[in-house]
Length: 581
Image 1: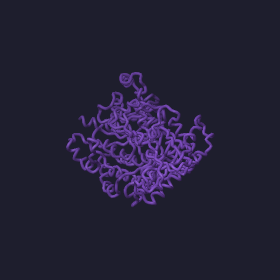
Image 2: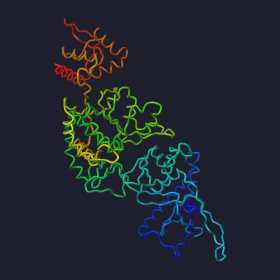
Image 3: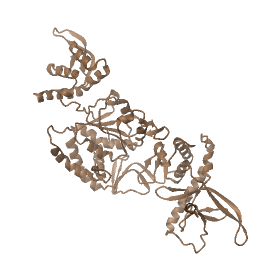
Image 4: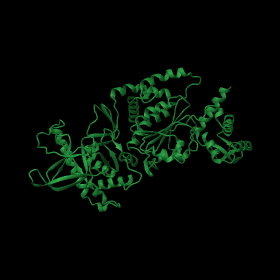
């Protein structure tokens, strides 16, 4: 007999025969637990076969129960191979290679998928008896595997969301995740969207509860938990095997708390001012609240400074708390962009590291910053809706300037620029304590990587600050350091700032000299001119003013409209001029 045939062989052993030796050591409690599991699954299977499938609006709705008729739940006893009880003959048909294994994190069962037939045969005594024969199907359909996972509790609904709950940490199943888990082909009778609709229809009739409590807003660690919904840190509480959590980290409370002073010291060293510190601290808890659906995706974050200020280091640490997706913005434009969009599915933190110029990216940034879903086509697949609910976080050294729509959603974090003339060894000496405390070596990386304890310490720090703010999140306005010297300003900006410096006026009237400078710089591109003036807080509008004779006039002028931007620009202009002197 070939090995393949031997693997598929179905043995008809009578468990009363004494010469068959047990192949595994079990106790009665385990067998009783397994019995309850298969009985519950068999009961759920009966229920799903009896629901009114004619109400399911799908051309193949009648084929689903036909396929489910071929599902047979295997039983266990003290022998190694599971068996299929055949009621009509009283036999136990031993199965060496089941068609499907199910595991919900608490129990496991196996499935034989195929037909059970009976036929009359003569036994050794010449009597005619009914004997069962099994006819296994070559393959179990993918949508049937998904349905069986639901019936056994491996996947479960809570509200409108479907979760995979067989691990300590649950997973939210989007269409993309469903497609990956059940290997749903791009063509076939049941596409991923139809499988999801099928599961929702079944759930609307059966309303099966999850075998584990789904803790959608609890972060579980070795000896404590952070309950975001109830806004508390629960001490001396290890993970419960009958619960599945939003996040799970293998860290101890004491180890995280030891790092808290260093977290605060790091922020003191790197933040430009208290408003940036406020925004940076709240970014962690806000992103976590959005990820667990306790808050909505209303904001995105931009961290900016000149190089080597700790921006990327911090981004690496906090991103380890999340399902993070790294983004190269230019990949999201063009013919193959669908594949890159699909790769963002399920990301809780959408990270743009070391970004170049953000100019011309407003449309892409608006989608990333505001849309909860986006249509994309994974490689070799059909278009699907990807989960784009993650919070966008940009790390850049470049000038930051957004349209008014995006600017209202942007939360700026200005990092403190390193002192001019600071040597590399001096900077390394300052950051060395943080590298040593927050990172470790990793065989998969040539660089040091953040430890889980460091990431959770940043989270605890954020949680405690949120608590001090009465659990409210109100981000503060921060104006970025887009300019460092007079050379960073354009010709038109320089003209207006110098006029402001010498006259003290908050407006500059349009005059032939200024008009000529703007024409040379911008040509007919009014949008570029407006954006450039906005960077220094100016707006083109009518201005009422008094001439030398005391007469009031109304003339077009570039007027300070945004006092914070204007103050930032003039301060850098004057400081730079003084430095040049």
